[in-house]
Image 1 (cartoon, rainbow, N blue to C red):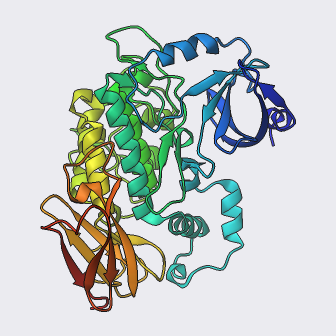
Image 2: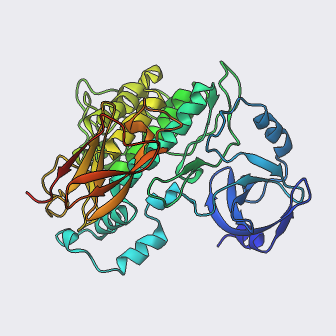
Length: 446
């Protein structure tokens, strides 16, 4: 436990209005600050940190707070904005739902790795010798597998898309700045509004999380823009889904075996000597680059198991073409749409708890027979529903309306699906189930 955390646990801090907040457990820590829970379940405190890791008393948070309040922030957008600055120290109070946790829960931490190492190995991983690979896959399954990550990422992309449509830049997307709850249709919030600003042609500061910064920002050629948000999001998404950083490939892991070739792209002048830093700064090709296999990797999950063809194309456009041509990076609305569509094509294996796309006849991870499911279809969307017996199923807005960055997760109707009889009955929602909504029951097994 850090010294800052120990001190904060025993501290009561007053805000500018005189309200006293009991500072509790640390939620997340990054390069710019640390977030703590408070005695109020729906409030958190963010304190800025200096280079020494201590609270930065020199920061002018009041001015920053006032600047954020003047921005054209879209209404009802799930971003935890500052509510009040602290009077007794640097920092501010912000809203945060009680049961939310940072996206770092999707990453296998050292403590969790030790816990998993003491757990029995599931049968579907019995043939893997490498203990780190086993721990990684066990954690991947326990944290919702691909399906849970797809919906979480879609909702982050929707938030960023709404900000960009309002002319705003988020500035520092990372695992510690995205929070999620545990619901069936989880809520996702961004918590750090410190760097939120309007896009400007020149000037201003650019902040990024190491490993996620866009090449033009890391190399000092440009500043934060919507397309640099898109880059950071895409790197984070690829690593969350495929379990490998999109630029840590052969050129980094096995440089002695990198023969290159007459058409290999030379490293640009000014590139750092460290190969990892070259990769993170965008000097090396994307590991899945369709036109350049000099930085290929066999690490991570097979892409065909975690990505649809449409998602693969978005990754190519952002991380391959978009590495040197930032204007080619797809807008966040495309990501929100395709990630949610991939989520709605996914099923979860009851045996190993890994998810996969419903086109497979058996689980590609443990070879168990595919479970039964229902496909709800309209002329706008398809959604896969798993279950057995009778299950009440929420039918979201996206089934019946054009895809909305704000409303696509809203429930418009609920239906009672009887998996044994193959029937669907209206339960909630205005009137009966809409005309044009069809349900197809696909039985389990081969």
